[in-house]
Amino acid sequence: MAASDPACDVAHGDGDPEPAERKVLVAVYANAVASYLLHWGRELGFRTVLLEPDPSRVTRAHRAGADEVSHDPARVEVTGADVVVTDHHRDDIGAVMAPLVRARPRWIGIMGSPRHQGPHGDALRAQGVDEALIATVRRPIGLDIGSKAPAEIALSTLAGLLADRNGRDGGFFDHR
Image 1 (cartoon, rainbow, N blue to C red):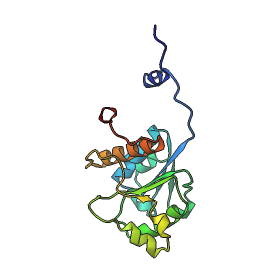
Image 2 (image 1 turned 90 degrees about the horizontal axis):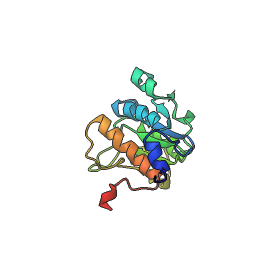
Image 3 (image 1 turned 90 degrees about the vertical axis):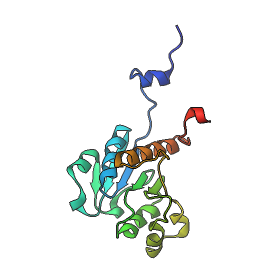
């Protein structure tokens, strides 16, 4: 009988995955994508945080997926965290993102089409954020799977975060 492969054991539910430090996922702005990010992020082992400055936008589904809900960007601990800004149309984007960018999370990105310049750069400059820190904000984010629906966008984003955390590019093994 062949020796057991620990990776196969884990996939079959028989082994224990390598213990890892708890990852933190911060979803900025309550919307449909954030709801999926929070729910699936928790399933993937993240401690999930929703940052939504407007409490009236937070739904029951958001609260169900979030380990923490915050309305103040200055109070969200992002050291070592993955921060995903889920809306680039909000008027408060500079004020919300500035303290997060300055805190230097492990990873920070903002959703948006690769065909258009994101408004976050000018909004962060207006808040006095240094160009080197603005350059740390990734856009577009997620793996290129042709996402269109909120669930697909969340899936591509989480897959991209996991690939990045694991030092991988996220491509198919047979395309290498």
